[in-house]
Length: 144
Length: 125
Image (cartoon, rainbow over all chains, first blue to last red; front, side):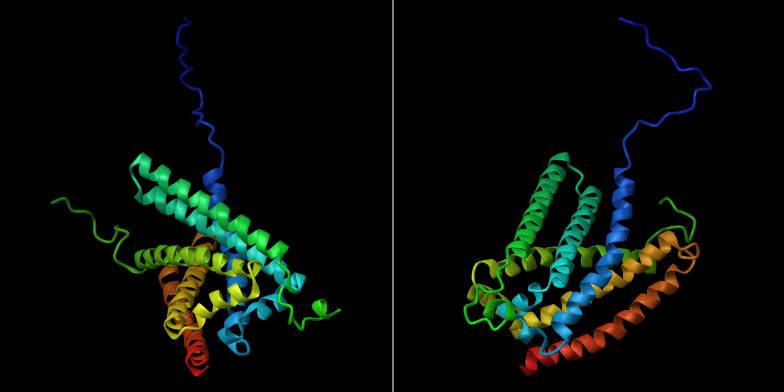
């Protein structure tokens, strides 16, 4: 067994390396938040304010939007950013209020599992969507 | 009872209440997002399954809840911009209280036309 070493008195204090995860997630929260302001308010405006608003939303409405790559990219970006932003926010809230280790573990497991389900399901839906699933569709991509 | 110097406690004023509201609206919108991805995924089941799911949103009671949802989203968005300005703008911390009233004012300016338009869609058919 070797004797414990004592650092020299003038040696600078070295913090335990723990990475920059908290700083990065703090920065991500602000960056994704600013992007989401545009993505979500644009989404609300186009779906609820334009035309007949909520009454216009049905399968044909979604097919018309997702036949266009612009809205596919928009919705995909919104899905990932919103879910990760919300997951990170809830992670912070759990860290603040859940004090017992078991409760924290349980809540975070539920949180990460639900976030995974939402991101995987949402991404699959956007990429595998068939605008012509409705046989009476009048979209130009379906009548060719 | 221990006392502390006046004016140093981070509680009771604009800064704390916007922080509380930011958390509450954030959690609310996060839970809605979960439901919204599930209802939208019905487009992969069948057109009629999706139409059934989305018809729930056209119900007048749910229509009123949508005004609440948009109220939460808009507050969270506007106050989020305020948080970014407090963190990154050199004069942000000094003007955080004034920016709170800016958030409140802009929120009203956006909510009034939205509520009028959305509620006339919901109740006007």
